[in-house]
Amino acid sequence: MLKIVPTGAALVADITGVDLKRDMDEVSFARIRKAFDEYGVLRFRGQDLSMEELLFFANRFGPLDPTEPGAYGGKHDLDTYPELMIVSNVKEDGELIGALGDGELMWHCDMSNRPAPPWGTFLYAVEVPETGGATGFASMYAALAELSDDLRIRLEGRWAVSDGTYDSAGNPNTLPISSAHPMIARHPYSNRDLLYLGRRRNGYIEGMPTDESDALLDELWDYVVDDKFVWTQEWQAGDLVLWDNLATIHRRDSFDPESRRIMWRLQLTGQTIPPA
Ligand SMILES: [Fe+2]
Image (tube, rainbow, N blue to C red; front, top):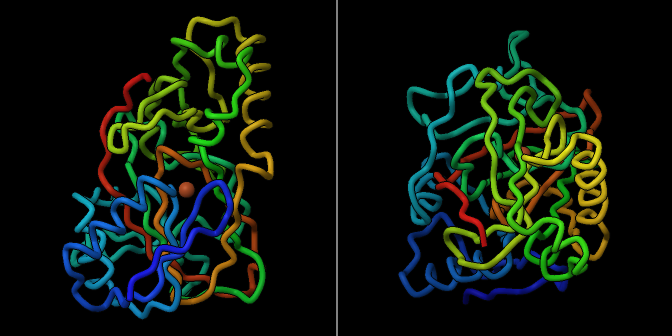
């Protein structure tokens, strides 16, 4: 029996009583789809999925982006599963099987440097270390709802640039494009208003002196990662987490380089983000 169990944090619901290996009826899927708009992050624990099964479930939400060959280093099974990216620190025959290593990843939205950032990201834990590698999420719906009037006035009509020079691990991007997005934005799928920050490094607010832009962005990035907006996922093998990549930001803790962590990642194709 499918249940949607809110965690009590500003975002996130656990979806229980569902085996994603099995085909799901339309009514059950519609409840999950609605919960995605409502909570921004959904967690399904205790799953045992093949790549095909994960892809089948993800495709019910909408089209998936293909992984860019060579964009992240590591080995991808691009011929069979062009949308599936492996996130891992594991080496086989001296070659990394996936991307993003074992280090800390700073707060960001995925690929906010693109004109149309992905709508959502699926991350499925195949193998995880006993400690470390947790993923933190912060709700940008809640961050906007609780924004002070003073800050809100300063952001009205403003657009901020997400710089694409580096990825979230601090490595050079192979597609170093940058894009501007409205800071007070309307989610193109849920139609809810949110604070959109993208990524901090090299970012700036258009039409604002650099000093002022830096100070305002620093203030905002400090504000949005307050405990009241944040929830942290401690991974277990078999966890599938789906996050709304427009309505949330996320980060990752580092973990022991000697331990093994293997995750499968998919992303939902997005569209340009309109102002609120
Ligand atoms: Fe990310």
